[in-house]
Length: 444
Image 1 (cartoon, rainbow, N blue to C red):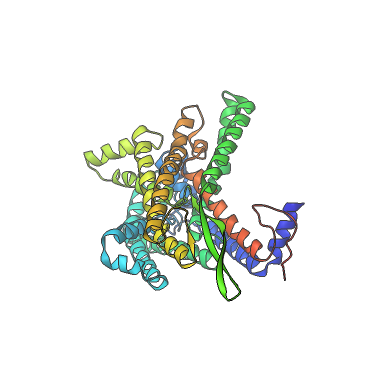
Image 2: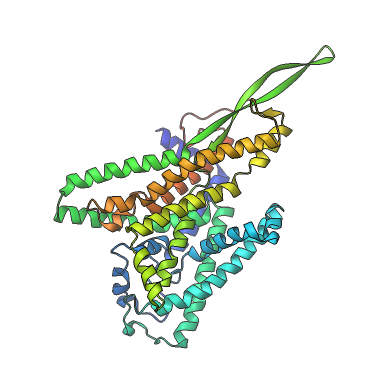
């Protein structure tokens, strides 16, 4: 009943209701576009392309990120990954290029220019990936008879234009969800694509267990383990280190001021302050070996062989290291310890035993470094856990949801979206999704 009351409260908040409807509408548009096949390709002859991504491998992750659009030869085949790649490049360049550093310090106006640079870079990446994708369709299982217009310029030129436009449109959808909807739009597009592949993966696992070894009982055990891993992921996302802060209070009495006992509060520093972005960034980098495999050279083939197996040792080792590195990097640029210290000093707050100002910033930075290390390692271990699960006989498609990129993104994005909804409820004096209960009454 409490859940029903909470859902009613959500519907009673007009702005929140409109944002949720807008979010679902734009997500439906994205899912519809993922089923629209590129002009010039016979959709009935794409079974070979789809089967190429059913047996696991890095291609299955890419296909999951696009919600099946990659294996459908859809207008959204490139998905949102070019935008993610462009974001990584721009943020990395922000460390070395003074102009970008200057923009980062200019607040909203600077961020607007950085977003524009990211969009143009996204188009540039699309212009490279689109023809590569179209040229590789034949080797990925699409027969020559499927190309109604042939493989010449009359197919390539419109195909490239449509793929680039599809990626830009998906990017626009993500930004609109962030601006007019609820949650992070880009992350939601990726999450919806991943969820779209989950039912099929689970059905394949059930069929393999029922027809093979283990039966229904083993499927139930696998589900139990899956829920435990989900709980661990939630704990990772929600865990915080509370830094006690005191605020000195003064009260006027008899023409002079006297100090009262300070009020005590906390600064919550998240164990995983960077959220799912290190996973997305690292996964984008791990797509590079698969792209290199398209080159007809011995070294490219060697790289593709070593890193093409997502359950292999070298893939998971490099993937885990990238996650740790990106966790530190993204935490450093998203947690402004200097600003936090300045705000504390301005509001009369202080950490016991630490001087306000620079020493407080250094102390917060030190604490963040200490908690980021175990957080990043745990994040990396959860990300590579599917490799261990696959060794126990779980089908590769279903193993991808035992941690890994898929589960972490789903959990992280779902919690982030729920927290935004929660803030709307609390601001309207309702109990939120995190802790349900009776409506709160505002105090006059």
